[in-house]
Image 1 (cartoon, rainbow, N blue to C red):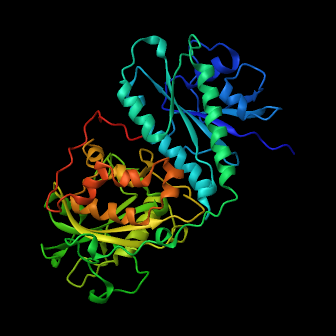
Image 2 (cartoon, rainbow, N blue to C red; image 1 turned 45 degrees about the vertical axis):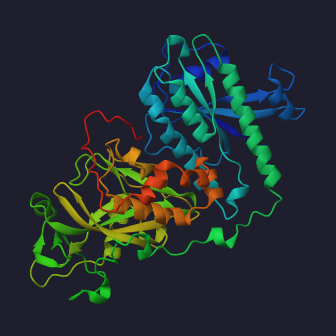
Image 3 (cartoon, rainbow, N blue to C red; image 1 turned 180 degrees about the horizontal axis):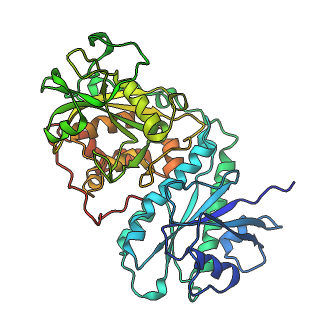
Length: 475
C-alpha cells in the first residue's frame, strides 16, 4: 500500500478567502461566490516536478522524481473541535487572513497556536526534539481590494515572533498565489531536512533542565499553604459521600468559618468570602495552558476566558455540623462535571498555590491546581454549546497586555506571578519551540514575562468588564 503524501493545510478565520485561494492555485480560476467550507475539505494531490516552473531554492531540495503533497482546507467556523487530520502527517500551514479585516488578523495567533499544539500533542514523545517543527506561511488575501488595514509593522512583528514568511495574494487575479504555495513547500522541506539532520544525534536533555525543583512558598512570600489541609479539618466525612450541591463554606478575613454555609448566589449577592478551586490542564514541558471560554449563562466570569475548570468547594451539610470537601476532591469533580474528564484520564493533580482574589462581588480563597496531560494528549471534552477551549503559551495569557484586552477572567498580580513562575520552572526550551515555535529564553527575557514575574504583589489592577464587541477575539 502506497504511503499517503504529507499534507499542506490551509487554515484561518472564516471568510478570508481560503477556498478561492485553493481554487485559483489548483484550477487557475476561482468562483465569484464559493460555498463556505464546513469541516475538513480535501483538495487534490500537488506534484512538484523539478523541471516545471519552481523557484531555484525549492528545486534544489526536490528529489529527481519530484514529490507529492496533498492540499487540505479546514473551515473557519468550527474552532472548538478543530484538530489536525487524524492519521496524516501535516508538515505545513498556510495561515490566511483578509488584509481588509483586522479581526481576522488578530485571530491568527490563536489559530496558529492551536494547530501547532494539536500536532505537538499528537506526535509528542520522550524525544520530542527529534520531531520537525510545523512550517507555516502567513498569507494576506484579497490584496487587490485596496490598501491593507493591517500595518506593515504589525505583520512583521507577528511574522518575526512566529518565524513566518509573509506573502500577499489575490485569488481574483492570481497575484502571489503560486509563490505562496511554493514558499510553504520550501519551508516544509527545510523543516524535514532539519529533522533528519538531528535524528541520529543524542537528544537527551541535561538533567538540570529536564527536571525542575518543586515550586513552594518561596515563589511568593504572600502565598499561603493549602487553604484547609485534611489533617486540620474537623468532622470530615468519609470519602465518596456526595456533597450538598448548592452550599459553600463562608469564611472571614482570616480564613476561618464565619457562619453556616450559604448558596453561591447568596455569596455573590452579599460579597461573602468563600473557597474555590481553579484547575489548569497543561503540558508543563511546552508551557501550554488550556484556556476555556465560559458559558454566557455562568454565575462567574460569564462569556470570559479563564482556567480549564473553576468550581466552589462544596459542603456536606447546611447546619453547624457541616464539613467541606477536600479541595483536591473539588478539582477532580470539576474536571468530570465541566469537561467530562474522569480523574484517571488526567495526570496527578498538582497543588500550585493558594491566594485570595476579589473581583467585584466575587470574593474567593482559591486553591490553584495544575493537571498535566499524559503523552496520549487531550481526550475529547464535553463542553456546553457556547463554550470553547484554546491552547495558549503561559507567558502570553499571563501578560498584562493580554489581560487588558478585557475578555479574560480577573486575576491579581499574586496569581499571575505564582502561576508564571511554576510554568517557567517546568518548561523545556526544545518542547516550547516545537509546540509554539517560540524561543523560551527570549520569552523569559521579554518585558511581558519579566513584568509578570517581578510585579508587586500588593498591586492589583481590575480587569475591565466584558463588552459587547471585544477588542481582541481570543478564538
